[in-house]
Amino acid sequence: MKTKSLIFSIVVLSVVSAGCEKAAVPATKEIESPVSVTAKIPTLTTAAFSSVTTVSAITGGMVSANGGASVTERGICYGLKPNPTIAELVVTPSSVSGSGEFVARLTGLTASTKYYVRAFAKNSVGVAYGNEIELNTANVAGATFTFTPMFIIGSTLAATDVEVLTDGGNAVTEKGICWGTSVNPTTADHKLKHNSTGTGKFRTMIKGLSEKTDYHVRAYAINASGVTYSDDVTFKTRPAGKMTYTFNKAQNPTAEQLAAYDRLQMPVDSATWYINNFSSTTKHVYLNYDPGVPTADANNEGWMRFGASTGVQNIRTMLHEMNHTLGTGTSSWWTGKIVGGKYQGQHVNALLKKIQNSSADVQLSGDSQHWWPYGLNQNSEVTSSWDYVYNCLIIEAMRKDGMTTYSGAYTP
Image: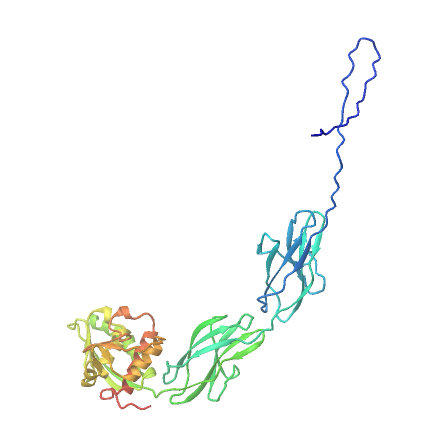
């Protein structure tokens, strides 16, 4: 049997003071049953730390109960004293899950420092805090390095290839190399600061060395922990080359000849410098301007001719022709070294592997007259002045492989 709910009302009757006026309609008011709910602040815990570095850490929290009112804000608060509150440093979550769990990343911290951390959550009642945990940021360590074995070694200069792999947890503010004639040189010895900071690869050129001398070199990096050094690397400078030249000029040159002489002077001086610094070649060559020559040519007796084309009156062509005067493409030694389009010589091919930073074995390519890469056969082959250096280093490696007839006896 169904029962009906009854609504009780209090009826207020108006008092009628005159006989035939219409009585007022009784007013009614419904009395509601009271409902009483007491909300509380949320309940939550603080998550353990992960990925702690010198300057950052990941933490978070878990809101297990909202206290009967929606959570309107949550995050992490932290400071250098116990019981941090939202009046101090606060980090908002980077992610929040439906279960109430959230993740936050603390950044901009100080290395080797203790922080006090609590998760917090806020609803309409107030702010609740999770359990307090202590965070000890990591100590700053020294940088770490890789130091490529040196192969760019001349008579008075040498280049180093270094990579700063890690910064030890603090920014590297200075890096470079230091060197001397004793083991484990420091920045108090000879020092060359690179123009970049942070991690990454860099190349430096040491100048002012003495020929045929043993040296020690180390990379260094400076961060908040101080100066860190790489392992000690040794190298020996080579004997200086003795490439000289005679520039044959007309006794009464025309304006055209004078202009050509001016254009060729810098290339012949520069090419001679590269060969003398990065090889031990001994050779005297003769430079001639001959407008009847289409481009440029040379023979192993040392004669070089440059035509009127300004496109070949440059360092690239000058080095290329000097290579010919030394025997590349102009000697029986060269003919025996090129088999199936590949150069047969361990020193050159080992050097090429270093230049190209290749893990696989590589071979220089060649034909009856030319070789590549770094043979400087066309202007398009030159991407930087390092290509001139590589050219001369390969010439020196060819001398180690037996090319001495037209370039002097090889001396280690």
